[in-house]
Amino acid sequence: MNFKKTILITGGAGYIGSHTIIELLKTTEFRIISIDNFSNSSIKTYDRIEKISGKKITNYTIDICDKINLEKLFEAEKNIVGIIHFAAFKSVPESVSNPFKYYHNNISSLLNILECCLKFNIPNFIFSSSCSVYGNISNLPVKEDTILGKAESPYAYTKQVGEEIIKDYTIAFPKLKTILLRYFNPVGAHSSGLIGELPIHKANNLVPIITQTAIGKIQQMTVFGSDYPTRDGTCIRDYIHVTDIANAHIKALMVLINGSNKSNYSIFNLGTGNGISVLEAIGAFEKISGQKLNYFIGDKRPGDVIAIYSDTEKSRVELGWEPQYNLEDMMETAWKWELEQLNFDKD
Image (cartoon, rainbow, N blue to C red; front, side, top):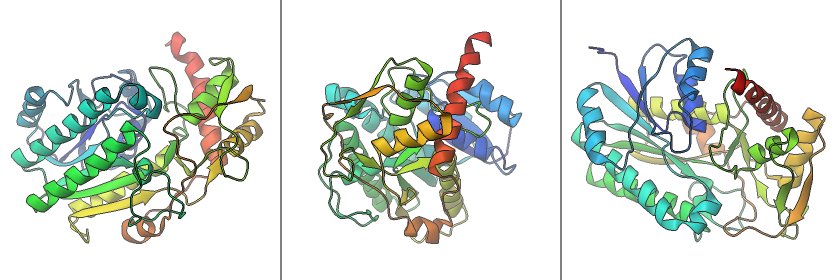
């Protein structure tokens, strides 16, 4: 039996989960295990993690909405000291067209994992939230104490509800310590180019759409709207490198494990503090890749927020976290990852 302290990553084969595992494996203090049922990820991700880190990962292929099998995992794994909960559906357009799928999966899975925290005495819980909880607000940059606006999509609403659920659990059960990380727009890939964002279904996020268009997987990309009240008429987002996001999760987890948290329920923004428009992101990609993108201006997309970017002061002061990658790094690693996928059929 392995008596090493264990960290559980839900959604470990996913985009941010896999990068967080890679960064966690650089430490020797913990054993890392994963839950992923591959509903929007690939089992081959673990092979790539092993290639980068030289270490194998134990994954439990479980649907977290299945509480019976979830509890069997916790009965088998006796030394879990912390959970980082990534597993959730995350497509804004899909949540608009199929809200039940998002309400059922994202809320039920959270309730089940929190119940297991209580039943199996796991005190440290990190929740993957989103800047989408802020909605359309005029006061930018947003701070953690900014009053939340109306959720613009069912996906965003599941994150708002999830945050309230965790808050109520933390109040009712003071032994549970939680940190909620509201990240803005994770992009880019691991510096090796061996792992990155790999949508199993149709890509919905901007940077994978850009790289897939550049390489020919998508014939022509759509810029959704050009008459927003922004500097070039396109939506503005705060893009942040996925490895920076991964390292923020580790810093947050260590704050809880070391007992240096100021509160048992804390919220932090994860962004760069810089708003980048869709057209500016396209321009940055064209610059680093030398590729001219084939795109056209289309209609606005339901559920899209006009502009949002972060105030990062609280994360810097209380987590000791600051982003290390710039926009060109994000685009360069994303393009390197897209090119690497040409080798998949040869594996």
